[in-house]
Length: 124
Image 1 (cartoon, rainbow, N blue to C red):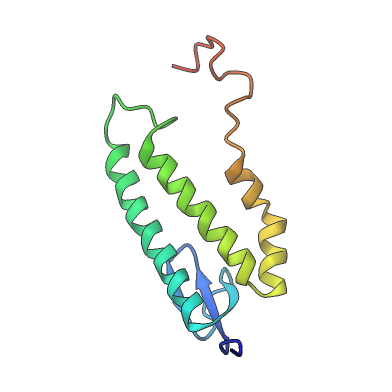
Image 2: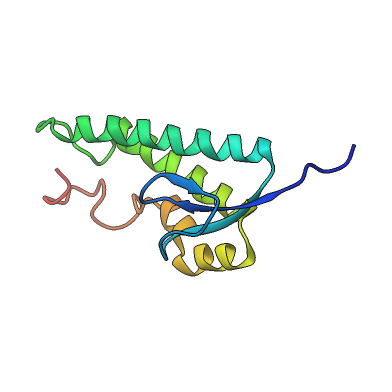
C-alpha cells in the first residue's frame, strides 16, 4: 500500500489553529497526511479542553497549582503536542523546537531541586 500523500500545514500553538497557508511568524510548518491531520486536530482540541479546565481550577484559592491535576493534564497535553509537531515538522520546525528546548523543559518538573519537599518555608 503506497504512502498517503502529505500536505504542508502551518500550526499556531498560541492560537490553536492549523492553516494551509502561512500566517504569523510563530507558526510551525508540518507535513501531514489526512490521518496525521486528524491526530493534530485532536491534540489541539484536547489541549484547548485541558487549558479551559486548568483555567477554572486556577481560581480555587486553597488549591496548590504545584501538583494540581489540571496543571498536570495541561502539561501532558503540551508535551504530546510538541512531540508530535517535532515528529511531523519540517526541518525548520524540528530545529526551532529543539532550539527552544521546550521538550526537555516540559519533561523536567524540577521537583528534585532544592526547595521541594525539604521543609522550605517557600514550599507551602
